[in-house]
Length: 485
Image 1: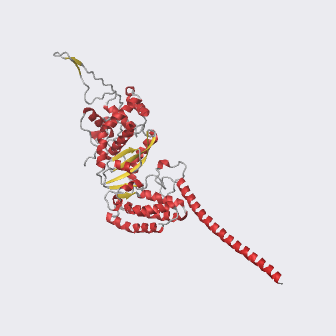
Image 2: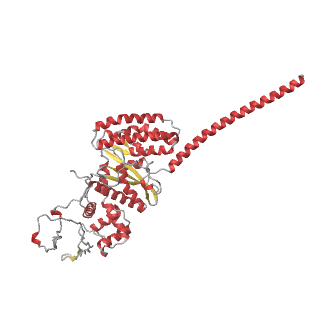
Image 3: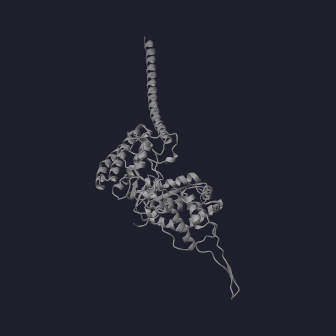
């Protein structure tokens, strides 16, 4: 009996040992499953993040609209129920007739017969209420060849022969001042290639206007040198502006990556090409600027005092949209953030339309500012990395979101800089950048002059012509500064 009991106890102990082993093994499996679940959650968040980054476009990030895939479905807008085009009650706009003093030629047209009974009509029966119809046409223009015959005269006293010099405003090359201004307008403002500009010149002004591609390039170099004084003046003037919109885009110089920076005010738009996209390059554009800087959240701009900054709300809206598309635990942040941003824009539009005063705007923004603070506080430890990074950034530089409510003329978006720099993007897409530093200087100066004059509603061709003449004659260059009303 004792021997049987001992054998049974051994079996029980062995079974208990197996049970303990199985329980330990089960516990290790549970820990492994929990670890795999946690790891799977991290991987799912990463997949969502990478998928959202892959699907980013101009509506969910800082990417330009030109980078959007043409087949990507646009974000659907809420239906308004209105048909496209002019709405009922819209007065519309019609072209106004030029006053009589601006009419260059008038053609009298009389009816020959009555439109009812076909009776012959006499011109002296006209009534004093004629119908006026005006057209704008351009007469044929042909390039003219001007020959300067520089005579040589022998001095009667010493016998030395002296040749006459060219007049001060006559260039040494084969292209006249206005021809040079037109050609650089075609390549610099209209962004045509040199070959296309040459062909357009022949089509507009006849075969006498045919020049070589090298001559077109020489015209650009001479015009660039002539515009240097106006460019430097604009660059210095923008340093003392009350506020400046700033943005940057990629460029190519000598087939290497470079960056085109833009500093924009309502009447001056200055551009600069640099090999770098860092704080040093930013400070070369705005080296002494102490006003309010309007930008996106790019870290380079943090070199400027946060109290004198305005972050672009349109970029913030796109950031929240991108966070929403990541999904998971970041989705609620994206959805709630978009609601706050849209509420801010609603109040801004009411202020812009004159429905509320600036003081009323500031009061309306107070609860929205509190809502945004609470939202960011709730998501400060969000497990999704991009969401957490956005929250950290907005909490640190959140004060720069509300500057527009206090400063006259300041807007809550950086659209002014993006619209201005769009011209550079189109130029880059057509030309693939510039082939040399001299080409980059031409781009900087032409963009600065053309966009600034366009904002001031001044003639670009006239300015180019006067600038080229001033350089040839050694006279004072025309100013790019806005004219006082």
